[in-house]
Image (cartoon, rainbow, N blue to C red; front, side):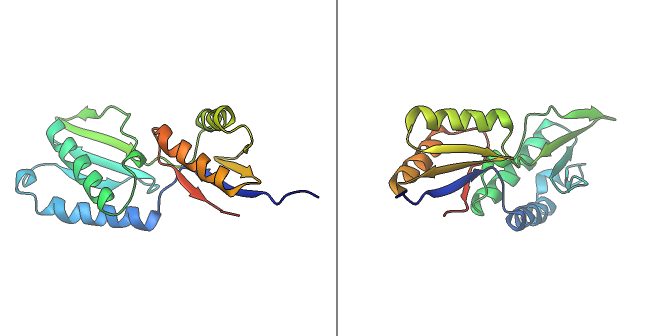
Length: 166
């Protein structure tokens, strides 16, 4: 007689509705910032709405806007790690433009890091890479709880969400 398997998925994603709220609130506050009045400081969605285009006259403006986004995200429970700030800003015509994509989906490399961590620490839990998510399965619910704690504690540089509990 075989045991029932419990499972959940590890995903890297964000709530689109909350991100819209973050954007709207940041836009509103941007309009009222006296230190940015009369400058080229602005915030726009990228065409695909999968990130932001931050513009300014200098690095101070870019930093002020990303800080604003992070603050609004924090209030709304959106992970700071969602903002991919790895690209260098471009300077054109004395303006700076910074493209900040939103991280969505776990890359194959990152999925392998997660499965290795779980294999090393919780050998009884089974892991399976499924597209841009990782499924974790076990006969024991407390083992799944341990897996979640382990992944959270590992502090990966991308947002982690646990979904599809079965």
